[in-house]
Length: 100
Length: 168
Image (cartoon, rainbow over all chains, first blue to last red; front, side):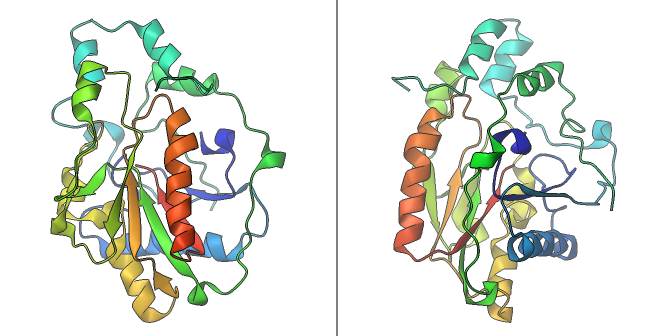
């Protein structure tokens, strides 16, 4: 998604939502990934500089918690089958709209 | 080092995949570029999170409106002083499990790590103000046109040279 948006510099990591830099209190890994970000900032010399970081989350997706205990409002409605998916998609627009 | 990150490894949702596939590509020839003009050890650096973080004394994001209008998300931002501690803040994004952040914000908002960088001289200083937005903003027009300029203006006023964004 970041590449579609196009940014000056970015590093990518395959870690779960909410724990981009590693697990709670794992300061060594958190720091290592921040070091990768710092290195990108220091060394990139042109826009659209991207790097995929070579880290692996220890657990598979089905054993990795990232969703909230209570689903977000849209998720709750979806569980009840009350979501107009067309309206949802309309609201994910990147065009300028007034009144929001 | 040949790993290619799979955007949907943890969220293999056909809806989300389809939505991304339908996104327009920005023109990469128009990507903004500001080169670092001095060593990072002389730079003032700031941090931006999208985890819905705010001071306990600050107003929360407008989750009441999101509950009334579930396809709307609060596009405003909050300022967090660099000396605010972990326990001075709330971590509130409704779409992720924020319990990890509530225990240790450095999982996605590495204030302690960048404070350490400051002590070690890896960065010049950490900016007086750090920032958070709440990342569920299906219509990001107000984020782009209103919130981002406000953050940029404040960063300029504090002499920030570089910012790291941590999108959760």
